[in-house]
Length: 530
Image 1 (cartoon, rainbow, N blue to C red):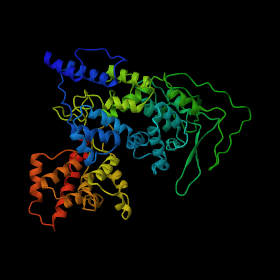
Image 2 (cartoon, one colour):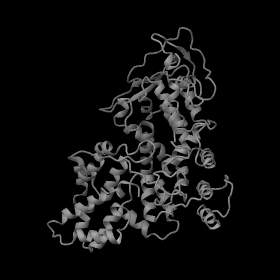
Image 3 (cartoon, one colour):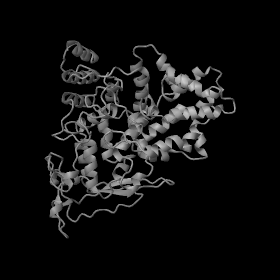
Image 4 (spheres, rainbow, N blue to C red):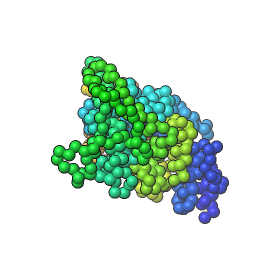
């Protein structure tokens, strides 16, 4: 028993239980708290991830694609003990990090199928806005405030809730406060303290928002978010109390779990201006939108920092300390309560610097664990091994380009296949992080012309490199595996692939190479982050 406890504590870099303190790096606090649970529950953690497994995982998580052949070989040959930390720094400084975070947060805010068609169309402008926040290292609280204020580039967030303040209420409280209010939309929550009045009090902050068409440039449609100076949510009781013709009573805005908003009355005889498309809408006499944006992002908001700390931890470790991440109720029990408190304090102490927060998580030994072990759960609650997750549609397509050294210019004649990848790989999970495959996905990976065009020999791509190389097939097979799976081939794999190529003459060799590349990019190992 003593040897087991010593091993677990050694993993966390500790010799005895130590209280989490502000003077310790967050990565050490993470490892200490997780290892303490292992010790208490006699859990055997996985061994640390190999360099190849870590390399592929951190590339996909931080820049949204697998490493190239040259990046893989350079890292695996590097003997510097600090090479993992140095790689993390390089990836965090890479422009691709901002683009990957933009994809991650775009899916948080919109999902794959927003309810409003105007938000379903290409969100390039919004994605550019999001990426810019990460490029400039804008603190999370600042850019969320700008998003809630609908500043230049962020207007599309509210477009998806056009004329639906109740929908906006459900989304905003879930995304930014980790609180599920949808039950209180129809009746007082049966298991939580939220009432319908709480729900409609929050809806009052969004009821005056008006989506106005902005200036159109070519085929690109833009929007502006106007705000009226008058108008309240009407509350007519629970669903079972609804009656035809019953209008309900106006409900004043009220901060969730807090006080009612105090606002000045509009002057007598005040008339709302007309909001015209293409013109900058006038400011309201008093902005409820500004009030809710200030309150949500305030340091003393009891929900905001905790919600984002839990969400980002889940983004990288597979599950939140409270799971699902957007259900941090008073009755939700965290798997590691002290760690969630520490993550929240750290988020506040570092003033919502998400890049710094991510840096600490991926430098932790907990993040860098291996992904094998006796536990069969898709997302181990005690984090005793790393999660294995499917690549998103965007990650899979980009990784295919990297693996095959594909030149996207080839698509000019046939069209960009992004739409196909989103169709077949856009929703690989059930909402809780568990993988849900499909026959359509399998058939697409193994038969689609969009895949074949990437694996066929074309000047400079992977298949062409293998065909043109004068190296022995054993070396070429290693290049194939390093390019596609970010690791060398095993002895058994090398033997089988050499047999595949043996006896093939120059006429059939392009077909054999295409088959080999296609076999690897369609295998389950490539489909996941390992």
